[in-house]
Image (cartoon, rainbow, N blue to C red; front, side):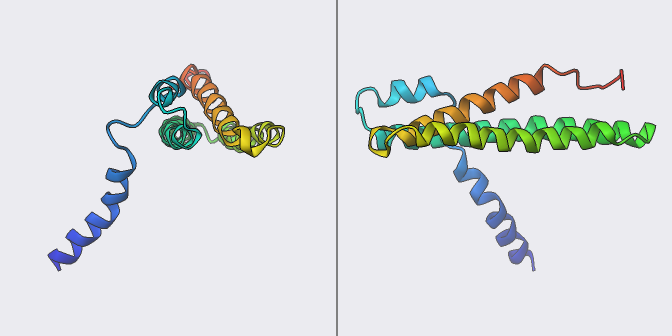
Length: 143
């Protein structure tokens, strides 16, 4: 029985431990500097994948924080409209980001770095959303 719990814990933690290597790039400039010597679009693409993973985790952290705070506030005052609107705004952001980056991808030939344009757009828009969410007062005392 203990062995089953250990195996389950390992199975759950293994992807987390492997998904965030300590030397993974966390911004576009680091990727540019890493791949400058190699000039490989494949290396740049892989590096940007790591940045996307990092940015997605950070964005989800901010979304979770605001969702939690809005849920707590709604439980106190009985008004769920802000929570519903926040969830809608996040869903709309995901749609906007996908469409905005997709047209940029489609405007560039795949052989000349369309995937890099898409990934760079994705990162930039996500960072902008993170910046916006991090600047919002999180205690919602005015609600």
